[in-house]
Image (cartoon, rainbow, N blue to C red; front, side):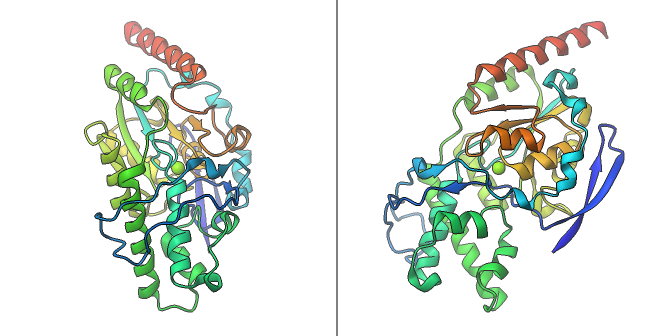
Amino acid sequence: MSDEVTIINEENEVVESLTTDSADSGYNSKTYNNSNNLPVSSPVNSAPTGVEDSAPHIDGSVLARCSGRVSKTPSHFKDYDLSLHSSLASVAPLEAILFDIDGTLCDSDPIHYYAFREMLQEIGFNGGEPITEEFFVKNCSGMHNEELCHVLFPDWDIERARKFMDDKEAMFRRIASEQLKPVTGLEKLCKWVEDQGFKRAAVTNAPRPNAELMISLLGLEDFFELLVIGSECDRAKPFPDPYLKALQGLGVSSEHSFIFEDSVSGIKAGVAAGMPVVGLATRNPEKLLSDAGATLVVEDYGHSKLWTALEELEKKTEEVKVAN
Ligand SMILES: [Mg+2]
């Protein structure tokens, strides 16, 4: 499947159009080590939509960093001129910050992997053998559910496949309800954003019920003024559409906004929308995110490198306000 990508500069002018394969879901590109220390859950088909079952513990330590599915990213993006965003201070005076959700606000990918593994085994997929982490990365992570219907179940009736994906998302939400945790330092960052009075939006390719649940579990319902869902845009990430929609919804300019993202796909979308992107290396290695176009890469929101950049941006923002 191919589609067209439009590269837009800081003035929202189209500077390049190109084609790429299907959009990434925004989930991290990564590989898991294939240890078998994920716990065994209660049977998957025991009412996956229910919340009464005790959710199994997902050990995030099973994840290992690696390069992931870079091949899905259009090579043309590498030629995009990043020089405009050598630092966050380039967007002073700052008006808005846009956040991806999965992997950026919270470490959710281990839960996605677990849900897929358990549910696919339950239906006898792969001869009843649990899918490996490598299989998950190559065939599940970073794909839309609609696309996954065809990849995983090419011989199934589409409605049956969609029902499976819906049940998987329900299982994700059930486990996430008990185990989802914020990325370190998120609370401190959100307080800083609120104190500064900057506008903020969540921009994700996750299904809306997942996105709303994660925001709720993180206690950020009142923090975000706007939630943009990729599948509700003409094109999801890695296309810039979701981020451009967020700018429009907040009534701000790309010249005075920046983004937090954790995936190659999301960083490409942000850069294509004309904004600097801070990469969260929650799962992906720093170099991968830097190569994707991140202006700055940090492991979490507590990193001194981030706060140095934010303080510089805050200072420049104040200087511009005083000068005007
Ligand atoms: Mg993400």
